[in-house]
Image (cartoon, rainbow, N blue to C red; front, side, top):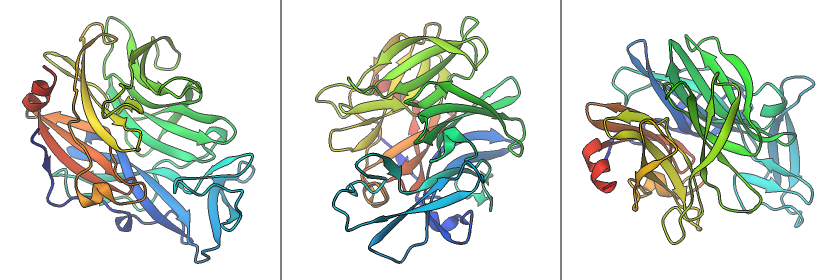
Length: 347
C-alpha cells in the first residue's frame, strides 16, 4: 500500500494552539473532522487541555462545574496506591474514573489543506450534564445546506453519548441533544438519504462482547432505531480488540467506502477500509484484511497515547482519499492514498 504522508507532518501540534485559559496547557490536538467551507478546507479539531501543574506528587484534573458553567479542578495524590494512574488518559479511584484532560472543539482553516490558520478560541466548549468531562472526536456531515456535527459527549453522570449539533456558518452552533444511548461513540452520519432514510454508523461499548460497528436508521436525524450490527472485531487480525467508525462514509461507483479504525490487544490503532452496498449499507461487500495505515512515523509511535493513527475525517477528491488523522493522541497529520490502491486491498 502506497501511503503519502505530508513532509510537514504533523501539520498541527499542541504548541500551535492557544489554551482556552491562561492556567491551562494544551496536551493534544487530534481526531479532527474535515469539510470544505467557503473555498477553504476547515478542520474541527479536538483540543485536549490540562491545568498547568509543577507538583509531581499531585495529579490535577479538570471537569465542568454544572452550577457555575466553568471548569473546576480536582486534585489526587500520586502516592496513593489505591488510585490507578496506569493509563495517561484516565485515573481511577476505588469508586470513580476521571479523565486527566478535558477536550473542546476548535476550528482551523486552510487554502491548501496543509497550512492552517487556527482560531484563538474554542468553537464549541463543554456546557451541560452530558459534557462534564469534555466533547471529543467530531464528524461533519453536510446535508441540504446544513453541516451536522456529531461528537462524543463524556460525563461521569451520563457516560459516553453521541451528541448532535448543526451549523450553517461555523460561528453559531445549535445543539440538538443526545442521539444514541450510552455508552456509545464513533458516530458517522451518511451524507444523504438512502431509500428515504438517514443512516449512521456507531459503536456501542457493551459490558460483554466485543466493540463492533453498528448501523442505525432515522427519518429525521434525531430519533434513531432499527439498529443492526454491521461488522465486528476479528480474532487474530490487526483489529481484534475493537473497531469503530472513522470518517463519514463517502460514495463511489462501487458503493459506500468507510475508513474505520481498529485496535489490537496491545492498543495499537490502525486504519482499515470497508465497502458497503450503495442501496443497503448494512451489507458489507468487502473489507480490508490488512491495515491501510499503521503507526510507523515517530510522531505516530510516540506521544500522549502511543502507537496510534486515528481518523475522524477524510476528503475524497481527484481519485485520492485525503486523510486527516490523529497521531499518538497528540497531533494532527495528513496522508493521501489513491482510491485504486484501497480498492485493490478490498478485492
